[in-house]
Image (cartoon, rainbow, N blue to C red; front, side, top):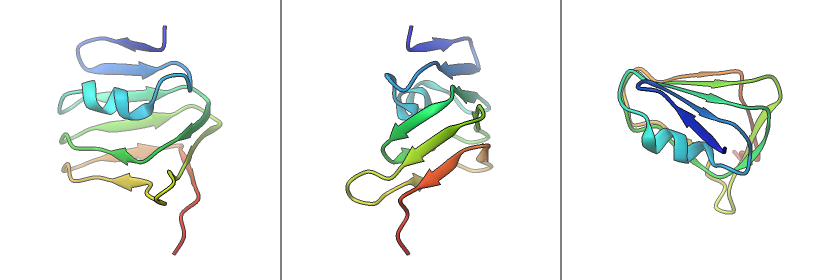
Length: 88
């Protein structure tokens, strides 16, 4: 499987799935755990009190537009994820 879920925890099991899929499925006060790998695409964390946890070796590369993270939700936490491709 590519995604696994319980009521408040969702796991992205491989880079065949997209982290955004997990973020879209999780509710407020939820956690998305991401397996090691390189993922491409911007992330939007819309829910409140969401935790995004990366296993060792998680890299998120910017999409073609150079976007990485948009977090309009309140109290969003991101742990152990390397973001690559941000141009300032």
